[in-house]
Image (tube, rainbow, N blue to C red; front, top):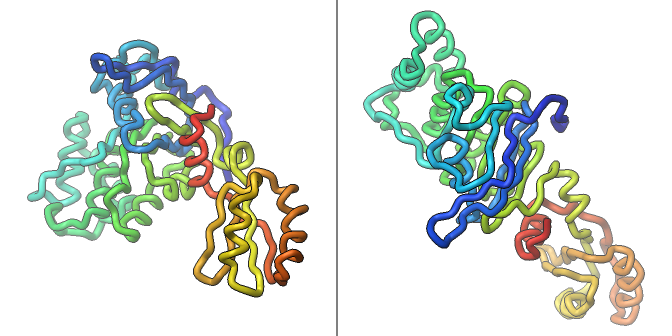
Length: 313
């Protein structure tokens, strides 16, 4: 179930710019993030995602524009108390175990006594590390990332900022971290910056796509697919599909044809009705029998590529 926005935005970014000399890293960024959602901040490497996060955490100043978090300016010290942050390459003290590290992080926020003990216990369970006694230096990358998310939650933030939290993980580590992020939905607003589209499609409610410092679009994943996604057809014939695939690639209503290992052709279409009209005629002309002709789901990856290539808003 997708989270619906019923309260004021957790994050409101308006006309945000950041320049480094003549280079403009951010160019009029506008983003609104619903409170309680898991929000995907998508873009290719170099799009300006990390620059945006640095401004949101107070590590960099904007050239112009504004960032408001829960209605307060990001430069307000009270705002920063409501934020947890996991950078793309988090640092750990390798000689500590998970409990020691979380207690250390909590102490930096002034947590002590029973409050600190209880919070550490809850976060260790959330991260799946409550029974791990190994020192952090012996952790896998996935374990370190889960500990990093737990550390970012030690101050009970209303907003959790994650910069590429799954980029260097193996499939098991990625699954574990994504499950941890998904479990926060409705309890903490999560701003999830990444270039890994499958991760966003799995856990996020709404996304913004950034390219060359500009937001191309912001919408729910379902709306993005419906609004920008091309149609997809899966087509299988009774003979070698190579010649027919080449003929289809020449049609103006065909964006791409991909022949899969089993001989099925995956067609990405700009005009579904035209394809449904012309493909049967083409099959008859080539003497091909149709074995499969059905629709397929358009993924976020196709939408992302189309938007970035076209620069559409």
